[in-house]
Amino acid sequence: MSVSRTDRKAPSQSHSAGVRPLLLKSAGLTLSGLLAEPADGPPRATVVAVHGGGMRAGYFDGQADADLSLLTLGARLGFTVLALDRPGYGRSAAQIPDGLTLEEQSDVLSAALETFADHHPVGRGFLLLAHSYGGKLALTTVARTPGLLALDASGVGHRYGIEPADRQRLRRHLEWEHNWGPLGLYPPGTFRAAEALVAPIPAREAAEVPLWPQMFEELAPRIGIPLRLTFAEHETWWRHEEPDIAEMTSRLTQAPVLRVERQPGAGHNISLGQAARSYHLRALAFFEECLQSAEDDSAAVRLRGARGTFAA
Image 1 (spheres, one colour):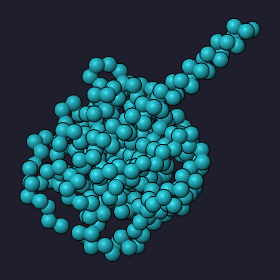
Image 2: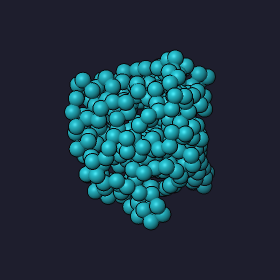
Image 3: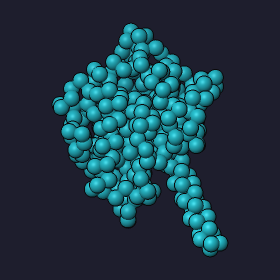
């Protein structure tokens, strides 16, 4: 597909001011990523951003417009934001060129969070914000790893709008349209900047794509933390009409908070589009609510304990 000539503006740097690259050892792998921390004190909590298939961590630090970056926005609002290249991407691609399964990636991600917490302040703990295939990894991880605080995921559902077998037959320009949607949803410079983010999808990761609907059925009842799912207005990879949403949410029986929302003016790659700031603010507001609710619950427990002691 041809790209508008307004997209020929190239970014002047590979990441935003205040964002720095980092390497993290985990489960025998070296993971690369990006980190932004609050400038004026310890973080309220740490947002772990998990990218989708065929992308890299820079997806959350879009360079076409200063308002796109989740990393800089989160740091300004008092969060540490850690965007990792998933196993099989970035630095670890040379170590595991065929990639890992979702469960194996989940083990690596959980270990990486422990390692990160050993060397950095994380505030109240870890909040996951994930996109597309990264949403699958995040859902897998929260179902298998206790102690995570909340999950916000976009571009992931439980039933494909296009079956994996049909996806293999898609012409390249049609697959491009499913990933991005209308060109006008993205600021000038987006697609030139995105060239640095695109990476091959590892073979073992790709092989699991058809298995996701059944994997979701098994994972969903084990997800016991607040969960927010967002579908872009122009999302076509996933089925997200009202009956589909009802079927999906009926499986998520243990999530204490469950929200499904739609992001107007967005394609599948929400965090690189003009709607990115709106989506990121909504996600961070959801995290604020989760932190406040947990704090209120803790205060109530302390109050009940104090009353019990007084009564005794």
